[in-house]
Length: 361
Image: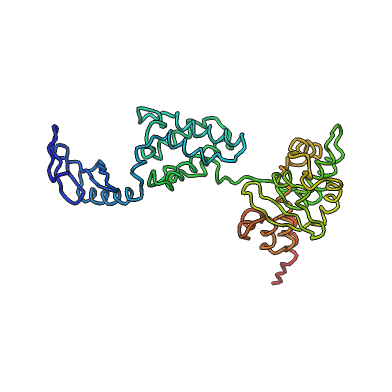
């Protein structure tokens, strides 16, 4: 662009490096040439000092971008994103991800003349994204709102990483509004309640899987494993001579060893007897219905299956087991993660610690 260029409606006059003033309106524009491509940006100001600051800011943003992708429509970006985001995931999970991003593409904001799927990602402001989320999750449960927000965050974070946009419009949205940081009370059963629930499930009327369901829950409560890890456990994963169980974290695919705790050894010996190494230890994979019914009959809170894993970890921490050891038994490298998530102070622990307080004035 020359220092002065003629236009039918006015003239652009160069006032500083990469900075032009449109004489008809007095508005400043920035003009950059990055990676061989020109990019003109309306700075939407008539103040020269502010225009210079905005020019420098826009230059830094553009240098972080891949300009070949700057005009790609969100619908095409979503298609590419889904190829990796949904790889090796369950059908239900894929459906949830696609539901969120299809909603993003179809949403038509009041400030735009076409659906978001037809515009480029840099056109999506924080306000537009918030209105989109409210529109898509109107009257939805907290869990659904959380799922939509988290998937939007992941999508735009990937766009930043791929240099499609310089910053995510989701960054300025407070997560708490969408249930992501809500303090949810998750009841953890006490030792006597665990025993009572196991006994209730084992003696449940009209149940063909009561024994196995009770053993499945016993493994979660007595070895601190999650539902997916318990369901995926195979006979060949257990080495009784070495006293080790090789667990595969289903979410990440990584393996880690845990000891065969005495609380589950006898049950595992019975469950694996006369089975081949490739067979699963448990044929059941979900006992949610039976567990809920047992809690209801006993008058207990509606404990989730995960609550029994939390019981195990919390019990170890309360008993003074080194958090680093607990973390390694859970397949974590950092003990801080275990402490942050599972170190709920139980009433029993409070009573024990109270005995140590002896202030005689």
